Amino acid sequence: MAKPISIEVWNPSGKYRVVSTKSMPGTRWIRLLTDQDCRLEICTEKKTILSVEDILALIGNRCDGVIGQLTEDWGEVLFSALKRAGGSAFSNMAVGYNNVDVNAANKYGIAVGNTPGVLTETTAELAASLSLAAARRIVEADQFMRAGLYDGWLPHLFVGNLLKGQTVGVIGAGRIGSAYARMMIEGFKMNLIYYDLYQATRLEKFVTAYGQFLKENGEPPVTWKRAASMEDVLREADVISLHPVLDKTTYHLINKESLAIMKKEAILVNASRGPVIDEAALVEHLKANPMFRVGLDVFEDEPFMKPGLAEQKNAVVVPHIASASKWTREGMATLAALNVLGKIKGYPIWSDPNRVEPFLDENSPAPAACPSIVNAKQLGLPSSKL
Ligand SMILES: NC(=O)c1ccc[n+]([C@@H]2O[C@H](COP(=O)([O-])OP(=O)(O)OC[C@H]3O[C@@H](n4cnc5c(N)ncnc54)[C@H](O)[C@@H]3O)[C@@H](O)[C@H]2O)c1
Ligand SMILES: O=C(O)[C@H](O)CO
Image (cartoon, rainbow, N blue to C red; front, top):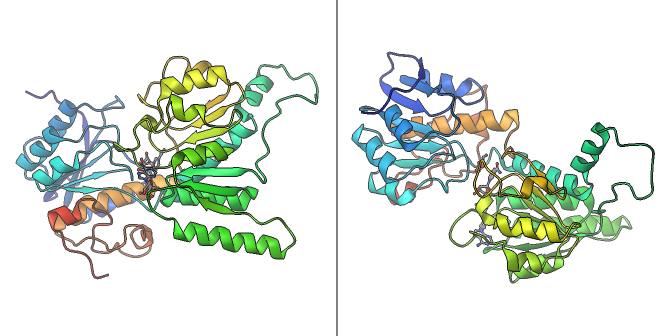
């Protein structure tokens, strides 16, 4: 028998039972569920990562839908249990859903939601912060200062890299990769080289127009190039930021061989998923190339770092906080709750998952639609006319 698990209950007499495996920021998501006849149970267990057994206990014998987290393993066991409990909806509170076996969800007719649109700029801003922190050695310099080692200005003290006029490389120029590219181009007048399976037409148009603007104002124009291969980006760029989805094609995309073709003084940033980089190979590369610097938000074996990484001064490391702005996290909670609620209520699927403002507007009721269901087509769910 599953062990008991601690929960907090909202609207105990609600008709639909919805479980959230974590407390989430804000209260609007709670109101949206309880106002629409949901009994909401929020797991209050102290441990950060819940096991499959913990979540089985939360699902219990009757459950209409679950809001879950990217740290959880949503596969055959959980989707079959949710189906047996009468459920039809699951939503990750995240845009990435590499922790979800969508085929298993399809098998049991469970809708899988995610939360694009609300975290694009926030995540890109953190990638830009890591780029700057690595380029200008902010963390090393901060530690030096706090250790009381500063005894006066010196010409060689913490010399780093100038970004202006250098080349920024983006691998995976989707929503976040494109937003990051724009920040680096507009903010620091960098040239762009990118690699993606698809053409980033809007990004290309933006760089062309901005380059034209600079030229008309007597400044050197910025330029863009779509690379034929990822290797071209690695060879040419001074700062490279990784923004692809994690799947079989991107696992260990950056490995010993690809690191070896990057410039010795390049900066590598990862705010996508840890396994996109072979982290053990990266540690060796950082040791051998002290001028090569990285900014990492994600790690191969989260919450752990590979041995040796923490000791490298040329690495800036933060704990998977790229989407952690108040507005974004509250928005993610709202979108995840509305995905589950919408499916339970039989609402259609919002036609453009990137147009999320109508769901986030506090002053008007949320549209009667599921904001983003990744397997809508496979389940034959209808599209909203709104
Ligand atoms: N660190 C964080 O907190 C955080 C926050 C948000 C998103 N993410 C991660 O970022 C990822 C990207 O999010 P997004 O909203 O920009 O998604 P997106 O789907 O808009 O963009 C992903 C891009 O990767 C490209 N791609 C896929 N396979 C590729 C390959 N083999 N080589 C090159 N490009 C490839 C796609 O064509 C697409 O353009 C998410 O899947 C998630 O894993 C992390
Ligand atoms: O995929 C995501 O959304 C992130 O990793 C958390 O914001």
